[in-house]
Length: 542
Image (cartoon, rainbow, N blue to C red; front, side):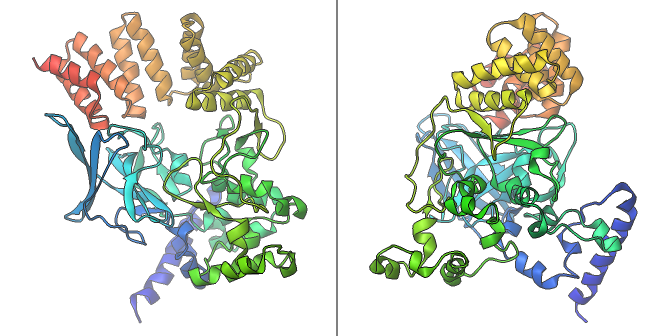
């Protein structure tokens, strides 16, 4: 008898006992290992898929990237980055170029996200708070380059928080610490990748009593598609319903019960990394099928065909609806691509939102869509799939996209919609916070401050609101109150470097020079090139 013969039943028994203990409180998630004893073939097959390998400890995933001290520079050549391995740890270093006293440092790479099929990003940790590293590995070019969103940054950007929603599509069993923006227990997730239960629902009742699990293929179309759309539908913005969070969805529900996904109206939008559901909805195949065509029509989530079998595998899927004679391509072209339907109708193209990668276009077009492109700045934001949206949700959608894109048309729409939501009594803490920000930007503090205060009473886990209230107290000369608000903001989100700098200034004025120095050094841990913090630290040190 080998170890696996013993461990399998023990794991099952442990999961069973945990499930029995938790049944009274409703079904609980038990993890992939609990599925293995009864479904060994599916379990082993699934573990070889990219979806099951979306995250893990740095250096543990397959395929293994090279930590061979590779170097690259940012877009302006201001900093050089180097990735390496030493004594079992993985790290990246940064060093400023062309200056006499360069800024430099090293950070440990704790976890990866991304299967490596296209790329891998990396996470750093600060006292349990996770941040995206500015370095990423791109499989197609087998090279380290700036992580997505960092290409135009010319300084070490170390304070991008990894929110639960970011981890949600790369890992399962997220162990977020309540009252924080991005702090997690260790490890931050129980399953590295999308787990069995992310599609089939929590398994404790199934183990304890044999209660059937969710079978996505047997659900009504909206509930079935929601399972895939929880990760493969990005839209322009996803707005959580009032009282919901990023981790609320459960298989068997409709995604629209937890959030509204907004897309731009008008012409089809450019392809994005996670726009599979949007693209498929545009396809003539999907429209003609009456929603019978879905992700599971072509994809078996439990297995991936071998590289040398993919063309024939997916051609077979196409031929369940089409005839070979339907293809109008010249015979020479068909022979050149090996009768691979995907080559012509689902080509791999660069997405509009991330560089250095290509993804399959799921719009299944007769002719490939042009690369790049964008929709007009005044295009309406509408819920994906049709239907209505509350004034609150629509206002937040325009606010989030407008601020992200610096689009004044959208922020103006957001301002009026959020005013309406407040007037009708349908504004929650998040809506109040955004409206307060718009009033503050208009220098209308008389309206902004009461909204911030009301939002804070509703939800005291908003770092941006705490930061704003601290600034108002500082303006009024209430230094101790400002310090309390800013300390709370940093407890929620430690990487707010400007809040740290303001807190240090307040601490200095109240006679706490030593604490002010510590606070400034912490700010420089997150943003080493922050000149305001360096200047104040030098001033204190003199």
